Image (cartoon, rainbow, N blue to C red; front, side, top):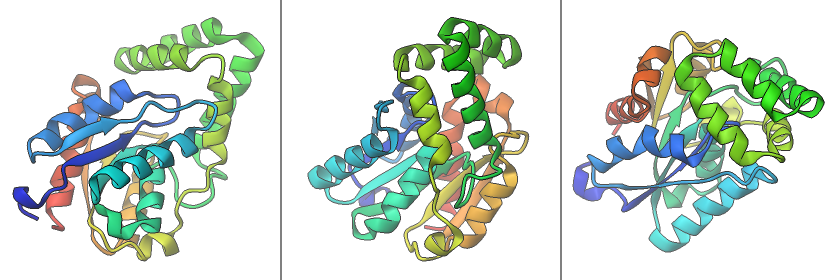
Length: 234
């Protein structure tokens, strides 16, 4: 795919508890370099997945074929939508996939359920303080901002994400559009094994690896990694 054939617009979706601010910084720079405008979706914490699907529908209605992508559950919902709308998708950018198919036994789903339980029991300020004390400073800053914006619906948003059934290997095997996958080699919540599983199952996919420190230093590293991987299968 040459630059002149890229669609005009890309829709990118945040991960669980995250926001459009982070998704925009993750993807905008890389997409701008190939002439694609980025629309980062602000999740509705009362219906996260539905708000993501609606945003992609609206963009495709307006622009025709689009690029879709996201982080964690955002990547999964983007891929699911692409599978259901293959004629409206030019490519998928999948950063930090969290699980394949059922969320049972997925570290990210367990973490979301635990955090939701703690929030309901102890409130936003106490749980945010605990998260800040145990997280890298960049991640603590990101989540403190996005959690406050989604309060008081944040626990419901986390529980919805934890129950989401991601595309399974059979669904992934049926997607013919190119996919670029980015995986952090040291992220226990978004295991490298899941990214490898997605890449192996998808007919036209490649994966690029990076570290959490690289993401923390510059979120745009995620977008660059997905674009680098995508270029290998175009």
